[in-house]
Length: 256
Image (cartoon, rainbow, N blue to C red):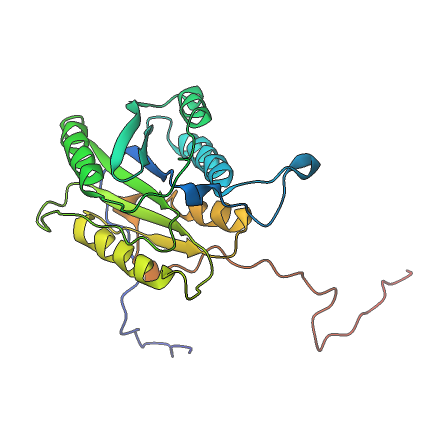
């Protein structure tokens, strides 16, 4: 809709408030349940199967490289989730090699866990968030969850919002033997319960690594600058540009 000259729009233009953005301490928590060993649809070099955990590791390294290109002061650490969360690499570091070494030794469990308690993860995050604040930094947790039938649980006061939680949920397609929708709803509840700033959640049951890579790029957005997830219009689909615009004639170049 065009606005006639002299009229003003009833909706004010979006403006970004002039605030100082804090550097981030980002804690990746990777689900190492047996379901993280499920193979993705696309194989790797020489036909080698690629598991969910393989794709998760690649996505994390993509994120770390891109985030450090934006601001080399961001720091990263890694935890794993079995029945509860535990440190995998406790020290936060801005070195890519530190992330590579931590991911290299991260492995999946040989059996399924009957529960997923996020309480310890939130305790770790709250403790680290207080230390981050003392250094004028903020803490974010990126949880990557892989179970299609186990709803995560937690015991956490809603008033304790000291960090931001983002979630990736990789799951099987719905069937009588699983309940990915119930699991997703529980993850949304956890995110809304603990997040200090706007947290994002993405899910995929397609088994495609590129979906994970595309979505993790959205998480490069700084929590202090985010719009609501419902307002996100990226990433946009790539559409092949037509050789000629409909309705236009292809006029040959002049020979003069």
